[in-house]
View 1: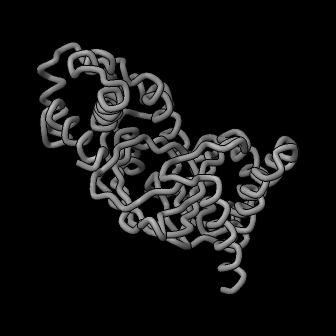
View 2: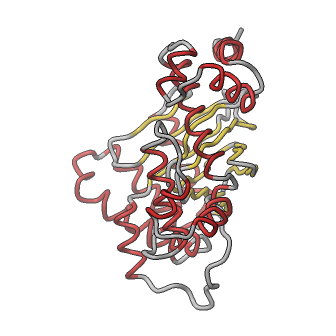
Length: 302
């Protein structure tokens, strides 16, 4: 416990120094981001990408599909597929903000390593699995994250050492309690990887109309099997997932780029403004204009 606290405290110091104000910082280390946030009751919506996140201080709640996850200091969040998420920080003050470090998963590096590292003895056969996993972080993983973060103070070492430490993090995760979870999404031919491939295609083509049968064929699955496994992983049907991708992006366009509702709906693939307004209200609980005004007011502190 003493070693874990020493490493965690050092990581907290690093994040506080490199992120002096609340926000998310993408660092010079490929895939590594640092987050500092304050508690806020307003849900924020975003698309979580496959990543390994270590919580250093505070607590956070994420609603992913129909599932809720609460995680905090000492825990590791692993995201296996791109998933639309709503989240808010539960514990985070000026004196003790929510802090975390996150490493975006290099799918090709992790898949190659997963093929080299044998599964742990007694690994269960494939069954239903969600696209998100939360578990206590191992001290060896925490230590590797510290060494990766410390490269920010030695940028000349990043090109050589960052890939080595990243590979070490993947290895330590694969042999740890979340290893089987990671392996399933990075093993060729597994049903979880087929769903991950379908999700990636949806993420890149959400503006196009959804043809579930065609998408199932794309990943070599029968339509009924595809539908069942897609919902097991994401907790949403393909149609619900597709709609959420569109509506989250429309909300982002209106908030960040001040696009009007009609233009945002067209930009994400809706042909009918009426349908866009109806589905937006169904997901977010209020029409686009009212929702965006409320979010802007909340963010400005009014």
